[in-house]
Amino acid sequence: VFLLGVARGLDALATSGGRSPLGLLEFSGGGIPTQPLLVRSAKGISRAVWELMVAELAPQDKDGGYARPADPFRSPQNFAPRAVDGSAPSPTAVIYSGNPCPWCHRIGLALAARRVPDTVVQMVSLEDNPIKASRGGWAFAEDRPDPLFGQKDLRGVYDKLQPGFVGRCTAPLGVDAESKQPISNESNDLMKFVNSLDVGAFVDRSGQAWEVELRPPELQSQLDEWAALLYFGLNNGVYRCGFSTSQEAYEKAAENVAETLDRVEARLGESRFLLGDKITEADIRLFPTIIRYDGAYSTIFKCGYQRIQNLPNTSGWMKDVYQSFARDTIDIPDAVASYYKWLIPLNPSGIIPRLPDQKLNEPHGRGTDSQIFHLRKSKVKQAAQEAVVV
Ligand SMILES: N[C@@H](CCC(=O)N[C@@H](CS)C(=O)NCC(=O)O)C(=O)O
Image 1 (cartoon, helix red, strand yellow):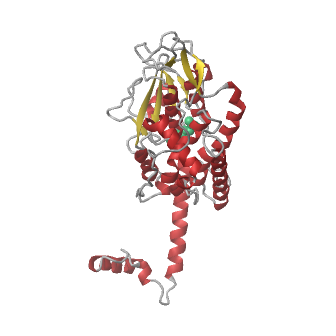
Image 2 (cartoon, rainbow, N blue to C red; image 1 turned 30 degrees about the horizontal axis):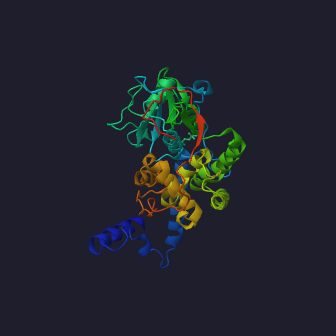
Image 3 (cartoon, rainbow, N blue to C red; image 1 turned 60 degrees about the vertical axis):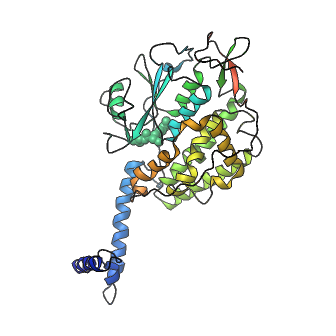
């Protein structure tokens, strides 16, 4: 039946061009119960292969839910707060990062919000290319080489930091540029590291330097609550949706995402940013997921029917953050395309759908006050960069 099908299919392909290549579905039936067998085998084989591929890509718990692997490099001793004037010949830290990655995006946003110059922290953007990389997805682009170890890919860097390293070579990864020791490969740690740097970014008329504070002490418990909520329901919630291998695990994750989006939408109806009229770390945690949501997560991760463009507060907030300081922190088409190109089990065709118009440059209608950051006094005497009067 199979060979006959092939022959018929090839013939059909050659002559009509409008039929399936093997012609199996056209030929089956008619007394021989081939179709149930075909469908059952196709379903069983593709499901088994698919499950294997997803579990390799995204480790699974026993219920078919995504279990994110732990991060091996966490060295809090390497990020005691430091004052850095940016005049040293090489940066204090290098952060290996990748444009599509939402966890890396947090670090780029924190650096941009705090105006940390790249003479202090150098973000090296790696290419997302698992065919070029020897493990994981990250390889150095020719025009953006590895500044510390001269490696070809991120695995090479992990191997330099810990010879014979076994595990996921994930971005972001922060490395102390002087000691060449890891700071952390966990984005929460790296956000805290970026917030701890004292670079004297703003100077007032009296000559006092100021820093953007992303975690004001009086907001810390609220910030921790929001961090947990956003991680569960959105940052990792969208991944739990996309990497589920059972209907039950998916349903739970999709419900968490929907509830968290509703909560965010309601919260942003009360104030310009998540915790009031100033940007905090909570906004920086939310933005990378929201900006990728309509183009990638809602579709490839099957997050559900909600769209950011239909949430007026959240989409206004997204435009506000984008226009205020986030514009240069992401290449959106590249980030979105990466999900469709490289999450092969979720999109075997590699076809990239047409992107929604996020209208990011349109008026956000969320407020006109340009003093959108909390500030703290800096210890840096002379501003490391062009003074900005506050
Ligand atoms: N826990 C890490 C997660 C980072 C992460 O998952 N990075 C992904 C890119 S979005 C990665 O590098 N994956 C490569 C791999 O798993 O091999 C963090 O928050 O920093």
